[in-house]
Length: 149
Image 1 (tube, rainbow, N blue to C red):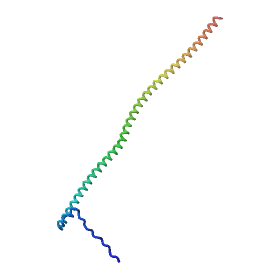
Image 2 (image 1 turned 180 degrees about the horizontal axis):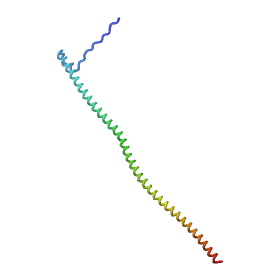
Image 3 (image 1 turned 180 degrees about the vertical axis):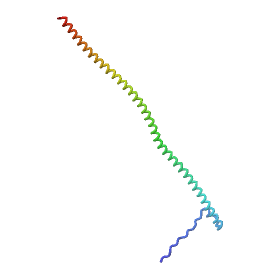
Image 4 (image 1 turned 45 degrees about the horizontal axis):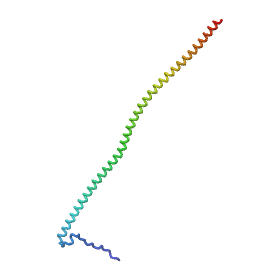
């Protein structure tokens, strides 16, 4: 059978600051722990600061996106309101124009009705004149016949 494989032991690599120091067992261990704690605290502080900075940037970006979306939506709504006001103004102007044309149409109708009545009266007068002319001719012919007989 084959023998179980053993993991090679890893040697601890000392940081460059520890290489030149003499190894004092208790002082070295304590200073290493203190350094580890300090490094951990410094890393935690930097990570917290980075997280806080990222959080602020994300909040600013989200606020900006929200503002842009609102501007896009409100811009369209505002444009609709402006167009609606323009349309209302045009409707009022068209209504006034329609009322003016209606009055003019009524005036034209009254004028054409008066002209039609005048034409009818002229026609009636013309018929009366023809009738009178025929009557006068008849009377003249009768007087002429009487005068000649």
